[in-house]
Every structure is written in structure tokens, then in C-alpha cells.
Length: 566
Image 1 (spheres, rainbow, N blue to C red):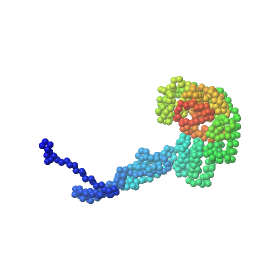
Image 2 (cartoon, rainbow, N blue to C red):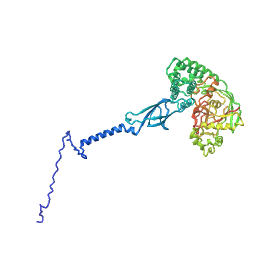
Image 3 (tube, rainbow, N blue to C red):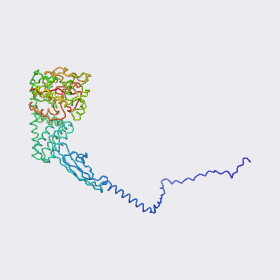
């Protein structure tokens, strides 16, 4: 039959279900698994496993106890001594600043410890190099140094300038004092002691708050107790220091009050010492404020195209003196004080671009194209004559005041101009005006007036809405001495270094104050006066003062000449 199927030739495909593995009940532990190790090269597992464990332990011990000493064979040098923060060089390479610990490889190494203004400690050290356990117990060798003070005057000048630039870090006063005393191990030579006292006196000129005053007192106390302990003799020395300051500065109470906290100032003001001083000071400034100032002579000279006016001698009441109701009754950094001024000459206007062009043509090192070289010596900033192109001032700006010049550049201009006058006017000195000379000239024979023209700015202030730069030199109305642009146009460099507390550390005698001003320490912050076209009239009073680093160059800062002519 056709549908007959031979069941013998057709395989059966009946599916068989796989058996399900039994799963252990929840929480049951898995059964143990045993691994049977086979011998290796006939060595039983127990034997070669023991060898592996021993080898592993030996490797760990090797890398812990021997490898560090083999790889970095040498010793740690622990350097300490006086003064601190000295630079350490090992084989001519910088290694740290003391106190410090530095690693030196085994062998003979050159060690150099140095610090500016101190001697240098140079030595060759034989550095050992133990191998065993250097990771656990490093090999160390202590090196003590003592650097002698080689340039005390340079150190004090640097420290004072550093404090003047960074008054928020007054610790430089006490640390410098402590380092100098340590350098001599407490046995200060007389000349070093006097220089240190002079440094602390000068530091007072930059102190305007209690934190700074505290550091000064720490320094003076350290100097008084050079033996390390306070004794009656040391205490007497400290009291003598304060007494000498009182003799030097009649207005020391004013400095003490301003530098103290508000609460302590009230306590000082309540003392008889303060009351007696205040009455004496008020009488002195009131008397001077009523004296008439001398009128200008009207005389002038011309130096290479620069017109200089003759300014008469007299006594300037310098500082804030324009509010009679408060004159002598308030204390601030612009405290009024007398300064004696000798006759001098000052330029009618600021130095112009045309006049400065003659200088850079004659002295190529001051050309704008030499800016990089000037920058490398710290004489200018990158804004030096920034608007000039191909060593020429911009077209149409010949009569504008030259700007973008540093204090150093302005001083160099004065030196160049003076050299050209050696034959025609022997004995003449061309320079920047002192701050006191500038203010005396700006007042133009007026006392108690805030502006060169009197009670109101008049046409002496340049600021107007949307102003974008200075006007031609001489644009303002003249003051009583024939000087122009004394309140605006551009700020002007003065010869003096800036000392914020100088007015407070003054005398009641004008001649004494002239000497004090002449003895101000040199720092990199210089006084600027007069304000610029960008300042509103409220900021441009004749006693307004500011400061800039001596290398600073900006489009709002120029200068005018002063001269002493026999």
C-alpha cells in the first residue's frame, strides 16, 4: 500500500526531558571543593609550595629592607641654623629653603647655604649611603650653619621697602630684627644697633594700624632684651627708645592715636598727655594758618624751552587745612603740619611730548623701541610710552603732557636736561619737585583753600562728562604763582618716597619738618600729586596725595620739572 510506512526505517524522535538539578535549600552552605595538585618535575606540592612562600617573603623583605637603599643610596641632610629661610644648593641645584630636609646621593657633595645680605656657607660634605632598612629608618645627617650679616644697611633698606610695598605683612619688621640679633648671637655691635634703631624709626613712617604697631613693639622689645630676658636695665632701654621718639616727633601722640584701635584711641585721648599735646598743637597750626603766604615774584627762566617760575620761600601748612572749624581738631593721615620751603623754580606746565621727544632722541636707551631692555632692569613697566609708534609721539599730540613715563624715566629726563645746562648755568640742579614744594607751588600763595584758584575749582579741574584724555599742557587758568594744570590733566611724579604716616611723625617746627622730609627713606613707592583728567573735582584738592611704584607707566601720569638755580 502506498501509504504504508516502514516503521523499522524511520527513527523515533520521542523527546526526553532533562532531569532538573536539585537546588540547595535557602541558607544551606555550598559543599566543599577539593583541588588536587599534581607534582611538578617530580617535586611534591608540599615542597614546591613551601619554596614559593619562602621566595615571596624574601622578595618582600628585599624590596622593603634593601631595594630603597640600593636605588636611592645616600642620606637625608637636615639643615638648620641662623638666619632662617636661607637658600640651599646641593651640587649647584636648588634643594630647599631652611629649615629643611633634603636627600643627597652618596659621595662628596657641595653644599651652599646663602641669603641676600649675609655671608655664604660653602662646604663639601661626605654623604654616606647605608643600604639596609633605609625605608624604615632613613639615614640622616644634621648640618648646622651660621651666616654672618655682611650688609646690614642693604638688609634694612630691603626690609623697609618690602614693608612699604606689602604693609599687610608687617611681620617683616619683627623677623628682620630677630634675625639680625640672632646673627650676632645677641651681642650687637654699636653701629649695627644704631642702624637697627634707625630701621625701626623709619618703619614707623609706614605704620597706620594696630597690627603693624604690635609688630613694631615686638621688634623694639626684642632689641631692648637682647640678652633673652627682660631685666630692669632692658626695660629702661625700651623706655628710653620711646622717650627719644617723643623728642624727635612732636606729633607722636597723633601717630599713636591713629594707629591704635578705636577703643584704645578713646583711652589715649582721655589722658592728660594727649590733652596737653592737643592744646599745644592746635595753637601752633592756628597761628600759622593766619599768617599771609608770600606772593609770587613773577620771575621765570627758560631751560631748553621749558618755562620755570620762581617760587618764593616761606612756611607751608601742609595737609588738610581748608576747613577752619576742624583745623587741628581731627587726626587723619593728612594732618596739617608746618614745613619750611626754600626758594626754588618749578615748571609752568607738565613736560610735553615734544619736549620728551628731544630727550629720547638724545638718549636712545630711553626710546620706546628699547622697552624690553628697560623692563629687564626694572626701570619701567610695559606701559612705557605705549601710545608712541616708531619712537615718535602720536600725530597731533606734541603739546599734550607726556604720559606713560615712570619715575625713573622722569628722573633721567632731569639728569639729561641738567647736563645740558652745565656750561650756561653752572651749579643749577634740575630735578623732580619734592612733595612739599609741589603743594606750596600748587597753592599759589593761598592758605586754607582747597583748590589752586581758591574755594572753588574754577577752570583748574579738567574732569567733564565723557572726557577721554588730557588736554594740552597749560590749558587751565593760572594760579597765584603763574602755574597751570596743578589740579587735573595728569598726575605728576614727586621726588619723595611715599610714607603714609609721615605727616603724623612730624614736628611743630617747620624747619625740623623740612629736615625730616629730606631724610625720608628711599623706597620703590613714590609720591604722585595733582590728579588727572579722569578724577572728579572732589578728589583734586591741593593736599590730595597718592603713590605709585617707581617703575609704573600709565596714560594718567606725567611730571613737571623743578630746579634750584643760583
